[in-house]
Length: 542
Image 1 (cartoon, helix red, strand yellow):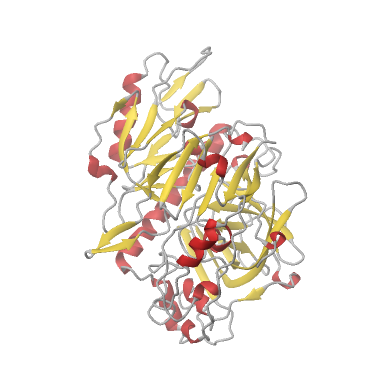
Image 2 (image 1 turned 180 degrees about the horizontal axis):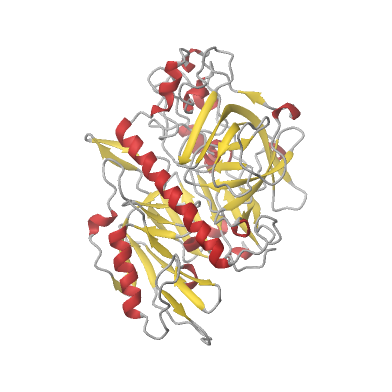
């Protein structure tokens, strides 16, 4: 059993924490889970991790019963601090709130476009991703590696809690996690992203990379770095970079390609490494060996000085999935509001938080985990979908057609909760009705015309106590999420201006609950019971 000091720890500067899927693998003679620490592989892998018939699909062994037995013995959860990035970051010394908002909205636009492209690709390819087609082209099958004997699931280590750092002072709406990688450990800040699955870091030699704070990770300087070879079954879980670098030999490092949108992608070698994170207890840390990650040599995108990305999506390679055997099927995060003191930290927690479970205002709504394709129930992709029923403004349900919120069988539409998107976005028909509802109900404050990015905006000059209509989301299973005003209205420069912190989804029917609306709520991802929990919380006190 892994000792308490050998569990995995990342000192996170995190944006919002998203969780991974809870789909259980079917039994067979081969246990890929034993090769990937903490991973319980789903039958239907996600868009960015779907093996073809020549690799892993149909060769997975379940550890569900062992996991359930281990979960019953779970100890106190492990907690990690998430700190706000210092305001003196050189990349944005004089940036105003409006400038930061504009940049965040710009990034959100490309992020939403990438979501739409990934959903469209999944629709076109059916239940099998094109990622593994590149493996076939190279002439090497990842399935030829020798099978590994099943091993017993390890005893759960309780709870892991990390601090999250807001990237807002970098001009980013994301949260970052401080991670120590390799042996000896070296510090890197990674973006936390519930909308993707792969963990990756910019690596030397960096042949085409974006600017980051600090040096690149150099695998040659770490004694614990190991390449994943083309003969390894795990190579079948990632996309090959088209025909440019196919697998041509069993001992060749496994090449990967992962894209996020028109301007963001990473290409490199799939590898294993030791990751270490600092805990909330001063001077204490935990390490996890053989974590799968991408060592990126070609990386492009709007990553705002971070060294890479930590994925928390549903796929088997995500950080959350790889921790599952250590901390179970639950993770949560609590994001402090962006106007908090920079010394106050957000938190990311792996494992059950008993204080949260006892919260009198904790509510749950079910994840939408399956959609029908060709008459069959198929697990949803990377994202965490929830089923919205009504939007309530000023205590009244708005006349938004029910079909507006539907997730169709080809993956179009629906609503996701996402840590990487800053603002909240609603499909255009719903957004127009929401916006008009506020315009009709707010008559006490002067409307600011033609204010950039957001609308409506109001001049609050001289107003001591702001009184704006309430806002809530009602889910299909009856749960209602009530938000404080500061979660759906944002103060901008000058501070007398307040704007509705929502926008319409550009050219998409997808709706997204972003991290701004999640501030000062403890958000729980319960993947065993397939539900999202939320409770109002002073996150600085968690």
